Structures are given as structure tokens and as C-alpha cells.
Image (cartoon, rainbow, N blue to C red):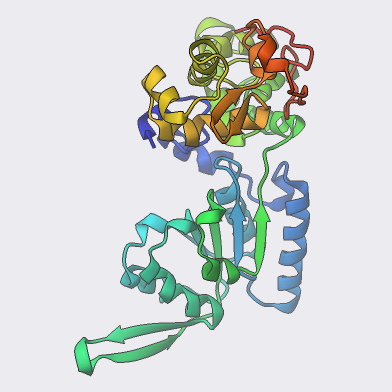
Amino acid sequence: MNDKASSNRHISPAKKREDGRLDGLMRPQQLAEFTGQERLKANLAILIEAAKGRQEPLDHILFHGPPGLGKTTLAHVVANEMNVNIRITAGPAIERAGDLAAILTNMRAGDILFIDEVHRLGRAVEEILYPAMEDFVLDIVVGKGPGAKNVRLKLPKFTIIGATTRLALLTAPLRARFGALYRMDFYEQDAIETIVMRGASILQVPIEPTGATEIARRSRGTPRVALRLLRRVRDFVEVRAQGEITGETAVAALNLLEIDQLGLDDLDRRVLRAIIEKFGGGPVGLDTIGASISEESDTIMDVVEPYLLQLGFLERTARGRMATPHAYRHLNLPLPQHVLVGKPNQPSLFNASGSDAEGDEVEE
């Protein structure tokens, strides 16, 4: 995937360096402070309360879903609720079995080990992890050749919390060892607005509810994107306005960033326009789309396509990608007759003022 193209986008859910600097400041500490994901929170509250009542460590937990939804934050919240220490690592960072052994032997009873992008663990590392998760033992081979010995070390009972954006890439044996699996979904509009208001309070920037609504509307249902846009709007109002985020200043700032009312940016629109204007609405292959706009096909598949599919702007077929009537209406382009023939008027997943089923124009 073209990481550079992804990282340059304000609406990319991938973590950036600037996000990490403010994570500790913005991150809620308790489950009651965590906004959204209500069903997941209810299940987690029961899991935590039951473990506390039995005075046992939590079951191993797996959070999965798109990036930017708060999987790492929830891991910290769980550690705070259990009043235990948490250690943070990532799948790609554990290159050898010895790396994992060093981490596990330093764990204390009840501690939490958070492994981000757990699907990227190497096979040799996974083999060490299986008995550690199941029986709390560590099998180490000492020596080589005929004189090699297997040493089994007992580990304190601990909890592993895994996070992945690609559940399908997780091996079946590893997935089976997680006692609780929770999917994180995109956030509702009101939940994102609450997150934006809380973030503005922490950043000490005045904000009106209309300003929070505009930021939330363009955040793709992703808290990380919402907080990033909040910081960019804050910069705008400090330089070009009176320092207060209103509906008008938020619109002006986000329009300057070329982010429209549904959260589409220039790359999203270039992909849609290429399909519609260069290839008659499709079907067309990803490689052809990428070549026509000078972008990698992997970038389009991993970064652009998922959100366009959620909006109902793009359709996958056996012959390639096709633009739907919603895409034509959103871009204010004439709708060819062949697009309507045999195609039901599918509702869009997200509704926002300025881009509804009737095809109102969206200010860009």
C-alpha cells in the first residue's frame, strides 16, 4: 500500500505521529467516560465486574474493526478498570520468539499485555504464545542438536488484549484462544459530536454545537479523524477567525482542506470521477483506475474503496468497480440512462444534509 498517500490525508484513519502526541491527553480513563460503542461497553462492564468478583484476571480479549475507532484506548480503559499494569507492543515489533519470551517473563499476576496488529505476529512467535495464553507456561528450547532440551517456565496469570484491523488474517488457532471477541463499528453522529466537544474542552478552544456537528459530519464515523479535524479547525480559527469554532468557521476550515460534507477528500473524488468520466461509470479494474489517476491500486483498495462502499457510492462486480447513482448525485454529475437500467435506488449508509437520496448538491 502507498503509505505516503494514506498518511498525507487528513481523513485517513491510520495513526499519525501528531495523533500519538495527544493520545494520552485525549484518552478517556474509565469505561463511563468512553463515548459510543454502547453494546461493546455493556459486555465489557459485565466481563470486568465478573472478573473482579472472582478476583481473577480477565479472559483474553480481541478487539477487531477498522482503524481509528479506539481499540488501544479501550485496552487502557480495561487496565484502569481492573487496576492493573498494561504493557504495549505490536505484532511487527515481536520479530523472534525470544522477544516475546522476554516480555512474558516480566509480566506480573493480573497484568495486561496489549498487542496491536496481532495478525502480523510471525508463526514462530505464535507457537510460543499458544501455551502462554492457554496454560500460562512458556516452552523454551535450550541448546541445539541432539543436546537440545525443552524447558517449561510457569508464568503468572495475565491477560492478553489483541487488536486487529484484519480479522480474516488472524490464524484460526490464535483466534480460538481469545475468550472474548468484540467488533468495533463506526460511530454514530451524536457520539462523534460528543467526542469533538470533549476534545475541544481539553484543548481549551471555544466551540459551538454547530461547529461540532460540522466536524463530526465529515469525520467518517471515526474518532481519530474527528479529533484530527478538530485540531486543524482550531488552527484555522486561531489564525483567520476570533478563536471560536462556529458552524461557519468549521465549514470554511474544512472546505479549505477540501473535505466535503460526507468526509470525502480530493483522492476519493478523483477515484469516483475517473470511474465516471473516463470509464463511463464502470465496470473498471483497480489497476486501470490507479493508472488513470497516478495512484497505487493497493492504496485505492485499502484506503479509498472501503468508505466509498459504505456510502453506497461504489459497487464491486466480477468485472470491476462501478459507480452508483449516489456517486453521480454527490458529484453533481448527469446520471446516464444505462446506470439506472436494472439498478434499484439503493439507500446510502450515511445520510448527511447536502447529500440525500434526492441528490441535493454538496458544497465543496
